[in-house]
Length: 152
Image (cartoon, rainbow, N blue to C red; front, top):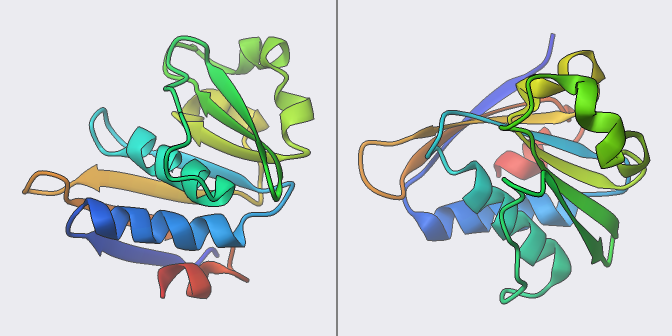
């Protein structure tokens, strides 16, 4: 059974600090699945992770809502940010280069669209908006070998 950790982010700096911890732990072959309703902070977290992993806080990280995937060359290797909101299921993933992307780092918003193609060893981050603006709750599961360092 996977261990689960729950974290609260009281503001954007706390979300960005978590993203920086996550970025330091990423390595090729990792998948991070970002779950949660619209407005939960999935895109904000993905942007912060990519900027931290690139070592560039000004890195342009456009939302892949319409392109479905954006790719980045990071010091740790290639990274791919998928937003699958507009997909009905895994049928269109081949055209997006899903299998090839798995050799690098993948961040996936709306991972329920992956169906059976969801990587078994992925880190799952379920986000929920908090009561106040820019607050959120996160439930993490997976990555049992690194989860403790991520939750610190």
